[in-house]
Image (cartoon, rainbow, N blue to C red; front, side):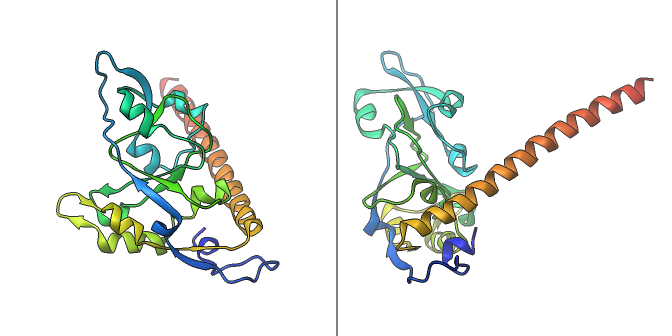
Length: 214
């Protein structure tokens, strides 16, 4: 992933130079005030939280059912609802090296907002949506973020500093798509292996119980 997303490894059919741009040139960051509370009189909504982004989860109309239920007022509903191609970033963490994890929202989400622990990034240009899910999760970008993070017990990064982060983008949407396909297939294989591993552990536990109880 690191090699493909920084152009250190290229597919043979692509040779055009990648563009180096600032995040602030290709999108806009925004925060909000939605917290983990249910307030009487407010509308119940689903909340994308810090750990959903940190764990790089796929957020869509099926997976939102597993999200936390909280409430939001009309202003929050109008300003913080999530739409297809929105990106979410983690702007703080206990260590500077863990700041800046990101995901993309794959579909328009009804009554689904993002936590005040996150930043929303609205892209001004069109990128392959699966490529968007990966392209900021590179050491090249995370190192830039860790260098400007401030704090002592908890480190944070400002919208202005986020906007100055440099990213490398392939000029061809076809190259974006091919990178996205490779990384997506790799993730699918990892998920499959993790599921199989969990099943084997359950089977092992059952066998051990039978052996130990005779």
